[in-house]
Image (cartoon, rainbow, N blue to C red):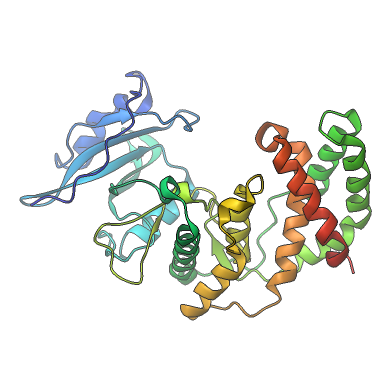
Length: 334
C-alpha cells in the first residue's frame, strides 16, 4: 500500500558534485536501506549549497511513502521541523500536524555535524498557485494552528529584536538622499519625520508582548494542503527557518507585506484580523492592543523599503510603503 502520488519535481538537476549526491550513500545507509535512490534538484529560488531531493521511504513493511530529503538543515529549521513533525518519542506526527511529518532526521552524517530531514512529500501545488480570498483565510488558519502547536515549546523571557531598525532606516535615508528611487525628495522628507519619531516608535515596538512563536516566512508559496488531513487542519506550513519568538501579529504582517505592490490580491481580506479570529477559535490570546502593534511594525517596514531596493525596489511597492507612513505615522507617535 502506497501513499498518494505527488507532483512532478522540478526538472533542473542538482550537480553531482554538490552535497546531496555526494552524501546520498551515507544517508541511505543511515535510513537502514529503507530510502530509495534520490532525485536531487535545485529550485529557481534556492540559494547556497543546500540540496533537496525526492525519493520514497518504506515507512512500514509493505508500505512506502513519497518523501522530501533535505540537507543541510540549519538549527532553527531543524528544531521546528522535528518538534512539529514528530511525536515526543520520535515517531512521525499525526495527519493533523501543522508542519510536514518527519520520518527520519539527524544532526550528523558521514562524520559531519550536519542536519538532515526526510519528510512527507505533499501532493498538489502550494496554495499560491490558485490564489483567492479563501487562500488568505486558509493561510491565517494554518498560521494559527502552527502557533498553537509551537506554543507548547515555551517562550524565552526576553528575546532580542533581530533588526537594528535605526541602521535600517538610516540606509533608506542614504538611498533617498542619493536620489536613486522614485519621488526621492518626498521620501527624504518622510524618512526625516520617521527618524525624528524613531525613539517613540521603537519604544512601542520594544514594549509589544512576546506571546507567540512566529513562523516568520508566511506566504502562500510556503503552504500546501495534506490530502488526508484531519479537521480542523486546512494547510501545512513549510520551511520554518525564520521561526522566532515575537508577537503573533508578525506572521500576518509578513503575509500582508508580500502583497504591498498588489494589495488587491488579498481580495479585501485583512490578514491581521483574520489571524486574530483564527487564534480566538483555537483558544489562543488575541485580545491585546494588537492594532497598535501592527501599525508600528507597518511603519518600520515601510520606512525600510527604500534601503531594500534589491528586494523591494518596484515603484508600486514603494508607493504603497509611502502611503503606509502617511496614514500611520501620526497614529503610532501620539
